[in-house]
Amino acid sequence: MDDNVNNLIEMARNARKKAYAPYSGFKVGAALICDDGTIYTGCNIENISFTPTVCAERTAIFKAISEGNKEFSKISVITGDSKPSPPCGVCRQVLSEFVGPDFEVILATTSGEVEILKFKELFPYTFEPNDAIGDN
Image 1 (cartoon, helix red, strand yellow):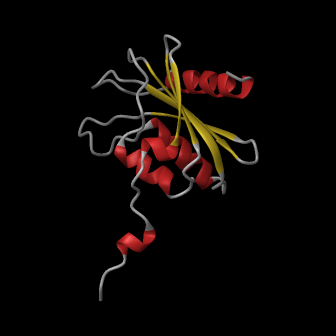
Image 2 (cartoon, rainbow, N blue to C red):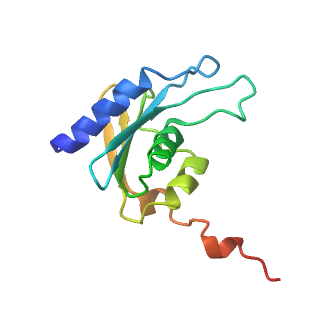
Image 3 (cartoon, helix red, strand yellow):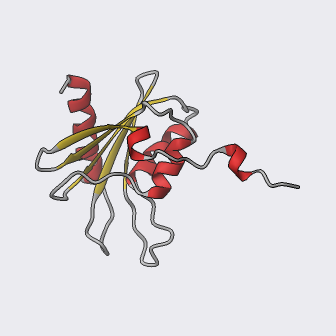
């Protein structure tokens, strides 16, 4: 693995330490690198009613967008699971709004396991803008 990937995983690891997951105990960290080199991190933040819970990936994405950055290069997601865990369906759909099929998704565990996928492998069928237009 190159230094950029290792750095992104380490930043996701540090973000994971800030996770608020008192109900599930499933802490997640994410680090998103933009085309201009800016990196945004995120952690999951749970809520007792679960519906308002926000994933680490979306936290990082929304931080980037709120700062005016919408061009992403790759994302690293780290969990304490025994195997790498991919982003949930909602996070995949949010990513699909901003990334192409070759966008890199780096999945890592705190024990050091790493898997790198292209977005098209993770989410082959996206809901696109034309899919939301009715037949009026």
